[in-house]
Amino acid sequence: MKDLKTVLIIGIIIVVLIVAAVALEWLKSGRTAETLSAGKPYDVVTTFKSDTETSRAFTWYTEDSGAAGLLQVVKGGKATFAEESVIKVEADNTVIKTDKGSRGVHKAEVSGLEADTLYTYRVGTGNEGEWSAAAQFTTAEADSDSATFINVTDSQGVTAADFERWGKTLNKAFQTFPAAQFIVHNGDLTETPEDSAAWDSLFSNAERWVTGIPLMPVTGNHDEIDEKAAEFTSHFNLPDNGAKGSIAGTSYSFDYGPVHVTVLNTESNLKKQADWLEKDLAGTDKQWKIVAMHRPAYGGNTYKKVEDWTVIFDKYQVDLVLQGHNHEYSRSYPLLDGAIVPEGEKPVGAARGTVYVVTNASGSKFNEKKEDQFYHKVHFQNNQPMFAGITVSGRTLSFEAYDIGGNKLDEFILTH
Image 1 (spheres, rainbow, N blue to C red):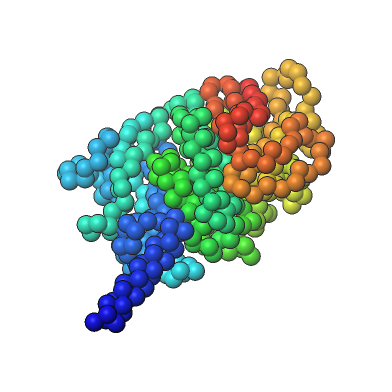
Image 2: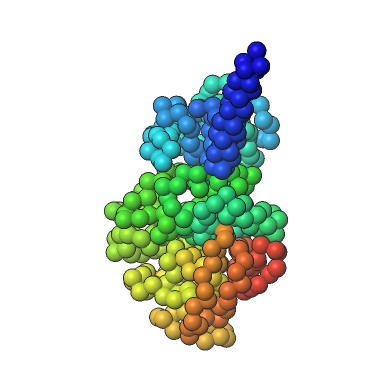
């Protein structure tokens, strides 16, 4: 009898250890036991895809690679989806092979919404217990002359602790800029694109924000490798108006209020992107033009392969270029034709020059400060995660850069 009890005790201990090990792996991946259901959504993120005033796009993963996806949206701040007025959208469902097996990828977009209006949504399979938590978003105000957004780059984590730090950076960013309407991330979201646990940690640590505030990503050299970016593009439902020959979702543009944002991919198809860039900038009537890309044209150093792009920036008077990659902070003087634009009053219609910024990393990886260059107005390495808030209002653009502790480290104003 004693031997039987001993065997039972040992068996119970083994089962407990196995369950604990499984739970630990899920925690490391940034998910909880709730997502053990194969159809339960995770890595939920919202983006802009079409008109920012009347539509919103969503992406999520499931463990069940054969699961269908459904988006439900209801007007207002209510979290009930039993009403006749609920909007239902079937997702486009695909499969991606990951280091943990095949996963379901689900993308949906709702359109025909009212501008400047609060909505509540959830995503899932339609089965009980396989829905995301309800989240809220607000559409852009119609014909607004103002916009506020957050800029971060190079979250680029490996460990769970890396992404916890990224999450804290984003928390501080929204504490500092609570009115921010979207996020621009300048690339290198994870260290290794095939590391699905890293992607899970990226989203789980930012869940409170990216389920309601659009996260607009730039492709970095850790997101696209050897002209392949499946893990990156599968996580985002992005505008399909980019350059021919580019991987869909790695070059695109969108408007928000008075701002036109052009997203470029420094990793491939540079020549055709130049042709598209010129058409894109020539085709906008927005007062403010902002470009986001990963490798910097003018950062801690210069990336010569994008010189053709800077000529186009000059031609169409791009105001601000947001960059990443160098894992340090740098801001240029206004530049035109590769030279500093002298300070002082400009004649009406004269080019103002373009300011180029790298907002340091938002995660835990920092590089040594590179040598100062002629174009640097501000250049430092503080070895702390950073973020910036950009606010456009009428004829003024203000840029403020902070560290994770909430200390303001740089600011400037551009005027038209």
